Image 1 (spheres, rainbow, N blue to C red):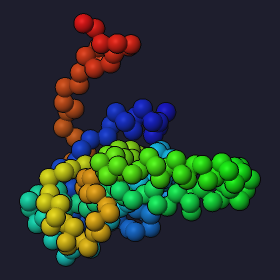
Image 2 (cartoon, rainbow, N blue to C red):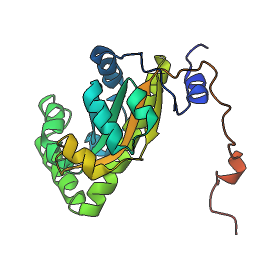
Image 3 (cartoon, rainbow, N blue to C red):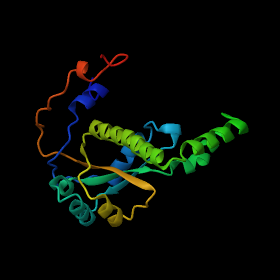
Image 4 (tube, rainbow, N blue to C red):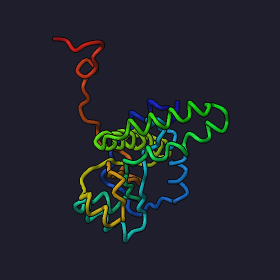
Length: 209
């Protein structure tokens, strides 16, 4: 089946050589995020936030912060993936609709909010959750992009403090990764590298001694 989930997963590659002449519209990126927003997140807190850099001058400054990597400069856009370490503070607003629709009573609503706040009192847990949930969202975005004919590459090769300053990113957001998006120059992507057989990384039940 064309554009089946299996086909998208099998054909997606990390692109390194984008066609710099190809532009991507804010409308098209927005449409992809409209789908990506359905990615799972703990307590539905939707920790993922994004900064899309598609304007050339600013993108070249991002390239400098990414150790001058060629793919950042030639991509149609560089997208920073952020995890909100204070996502729990939005719990009331997120659950208010369910409360007003009668999907939970006042006691359930209050207990849910209190439970979420209690779970997020550990700063290290807040950071870990920000990374976990933003990563789920980012992977979903990359698969959506592939389904629409766009190539992507996730990367962590950048100076996070330089990007934080350049893009005025508040401290509450942990910079999880960057994604470049565009059209790869070649229609013949390099062969996929070795993939382990499932017997090497899947364990049914306890690990064998």
